[in-house]
Each structure stands twice: as C-alpha cells, then as structure tokens.
Length: 266
Image 1: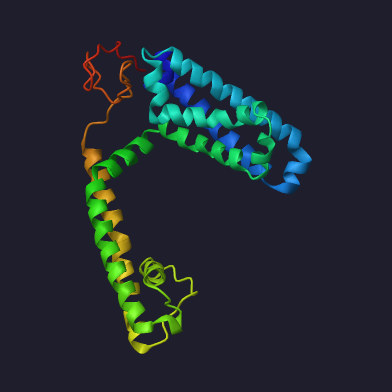
Image 2: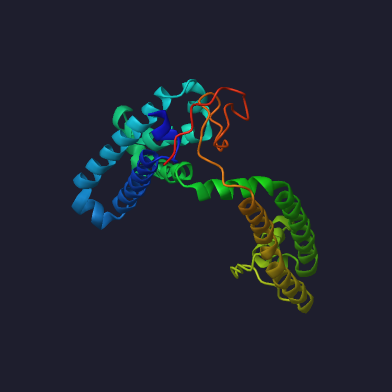
C-alpha cells in the first residue's frame, strides 16, 4: 500500500495517481457548478451527493497515507498532509458544527475545498519540477522584486510631488499604487497624470514594465532548463522523513539516513 500511494514508478502507483487526479478535478468541478445559482437549484441533491462521495474518498486516502508511514504525525504536519486535511475538513465542519450553514452562505467552506487543487502537485511530476525551479531561484527573484519595489516607490513619490493632490495623487501610498499599476502595464485609469512631466514619467514606467515582466520568466526558465540536464529522479519516498527523489540503487535516505524499501518499478 505504501508503494502504491507514495511511489508512481509502478503500474499500480500510476493508476492510483490518475484516479486521484480525476477525483480532484471532478470534485472541484462540482463545487464550481454548485456556485452557479441556476445549476445549484436544479441539481443541488446530485452535487451534494458528489461532494460527500469525494469527501469520503479523500478521507480514505488521507487515513491510508497516515497508516502506511512510520511517523503519521510528521506527514500530518507536512505541506501535503495539511492540504489533504483541508480538502476534507470543510464538508465535515458544515455537517458537525452547529451554525456552519452561515459560513456556507458566504462560501468560506466551499472556498477551502479549492485547496484540493493543490493536491495535484503530489501526483504530477512537473509540479515538483516547477516548485524546485522556484525554490532554486528564490534569492534572485527576491532581489529582483526588491529592486522593482525601490523603483516603484521612488517613482510614486516623484509623481506625488509632480502631480499633487489636485490631480488625484492625494498621498504617497496612492502614488505608489499608481506606479505599481503603471509598471505592471495594468493601467486601471482611476488615477492618471495630468501634467506633461507626469505623463513623461508615466511613459517611462510603462516602458520599464515591459522589461521588468520578462526578468522573472528568464530566471525561472534558466533553472528549469538546468533541471532537465540533471538525471530524472524516481518517486521513491522515505517512510521516515517523506523525502522524495532517491536514486534507484539507493539503500538509505539521502536526508535522514533511514533504510529505504526495495525499489519497485515497471
């Protein structure tokens, strides 16, 4: 059961992943359809039955994951363990907690069900690849964003001085908000420069935005290209610390040193 649930290199493991991916997408589709008033009024009972079916299915999966790892508490507190819990908790909360229907009316619980989409990352390898690329480039991206924020703050302050409250730039935070919409090329139009000097600054910010938007894409793309050169890891998972990606011939976990089960694959 551990091999089927946590590793996808076997035929049974791949089938398990595909079934769970389909269940996640169908369950989210049911929640989305239930938010459409005309559909909900006509098919409410059917959608409610689907909701409970998928909740029970994910509950069985969650309990199975806890039962086949050596340290269930560690998995329960991990990122995917929390996501698994959030994917089933709202339905039970609405059923067990008195007055929870009030929360349903404002769609808070149904919003939490959308966390099921995050479960996809544990079944699709490319999500992990993207996550590793983002993690590897996080320092570069943070430095880049800090430079962007400095530029935006300085230009927003300059626009506050140039345009002033009479043209809608009533404060520095408001001017910085305008600078963010300009540099991201959104341009809501709720605040616009009226002076020639202000329009010159706005033109500079818009042109700057084109270059700024391309930088993070290049950083992440280079990291993803570098990962393609690295040999493709397996889905072998340590039962102790839940670290993934061990080599086929590895006998011990590269993170905690625990003994690994034999590598099973098709």
